[in-house]
Image (cartoon, rainbow, N blue to C red; front, side):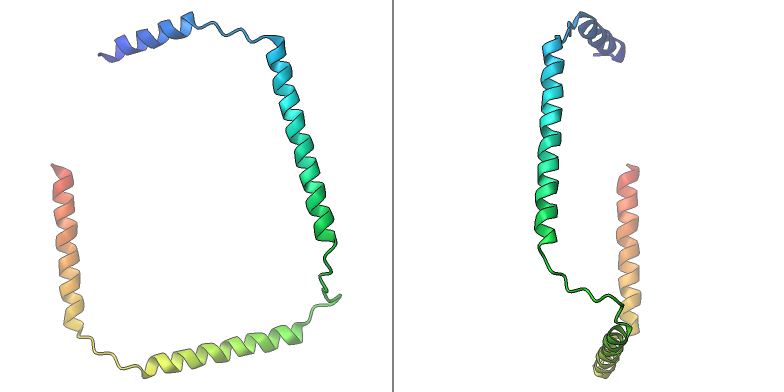
Length: 117
């Protein structure tokens, strides 16, 4: 089927389409939208009410000293991990990276040659 024939079929179908929505259809849609909005308002109100029941116990002023101590603990933890990682012996041969690089390049070249077909 040629593009023009397809376009002609679609055009004829759209021309013969009779879509005359009645006013009651619009009223039903409006009622559905209003109901959804009421449900949203009820949901928001319910969530707000439940969240307001929690006592968050938030300090009136920021506790920068506590934050600083926790930050220092994190830095110390990171330093400990780095030290332990540096103690692990590595047994890699740099030649292996070159072999891997060559293999990846061959795979890329194969993929590109397949895509050119």
